[in-house]
Image 1 (cartoon, helix red, strand yellow):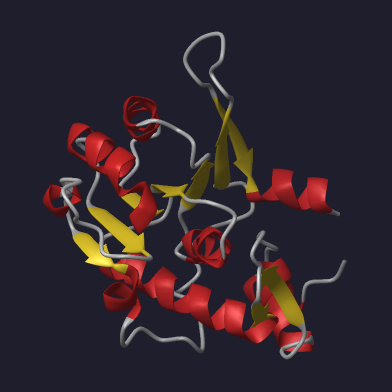
Image 2: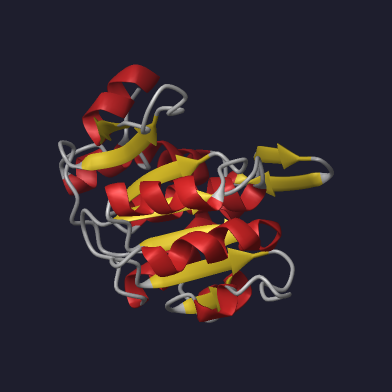
Length: 208
């Protein structure tokens, strides 16, 4: 597959898949979640805004960002946003309990956690135990209903975090193809979960 954006920046990165699709097929449906439909242009714009929000909140090249969410549009947006912020994305199963989530956050030294309001209880249990965490962004319903998540560092509702952020372009690209793109954790059913470290080049090769 050709990546026009790689011609501009010199190296192909994983999110060039989205940039290319949004440029070629902006109005085509990219994502279907229940009755919700999102085009490539909308997915690109939404992930640009969240990427800028992450950068504004201190996320820099190589930082780990944990996305603790269900099969939802916000999880997909967050995946691409973290990559566009030049950071490393780690998607965590929404069934993960608070103590194991805390272990994962500490193991990869996550600086940001993106989650949903319905998972606030587990997030609230984990967040205070992660010394590296700078910000927690929460989508969905109100995030403090006796969960204790209001004490999490840099807490913000998704809508507030992305308000006013640029949508027409991602943050400045500084990552290269041999930088980490993702850390995928094993289930940990027979011991502590292990993180599988994948570069942009690893994932591009697998995808193509």
